Length: 219
Image (cartoon, rainbow, N blue to C red; front, top):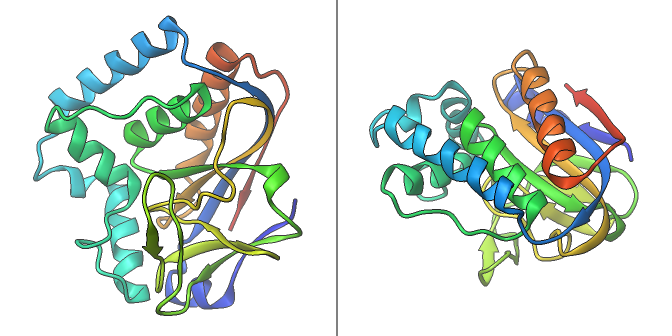
């Protein structure tokens, strides 16, 4: 599947890059081993961050800067990595969905990159990261209509389906054998993506039984 970044995003946020993993997985409930690794990671993060230091993570800070540049309040619409880290530091916990989403969230809060995982079978044609027009909405996962206007949003030929704050219901990853695209959103360049793509792939192999994983970086 071909990915690109729109000229508007490139000119407004010139350090935008996408890290992409493409793989097949048996999506299922979390194993005890994965849950244990996840909780250990959350405990370590809770002790290493305070509420006022979360926004200083360079990947979170650059995402906040991109939102502001595109016309979206980073305070009213927190990116997913920041929002999850705030829950971790407040000891509020994170929801457990399935093995792929668990790995997705573990890498996101560990790195500071917001990450979306999408069911490739629900996507059509090429994919482009664009600034959504003001007033654009879509049905979000676990919530009603989400205002995605002015956010950096992934579009296929069917319309918008994902962004660094909240993904759409259309391409959500559900249980069963799936072809999946996981996207790391970077707004501070591509240089930090490779080690986290490798770590993501390693966790998919260890906890989700994934064997073949294609990775690429779009800038």
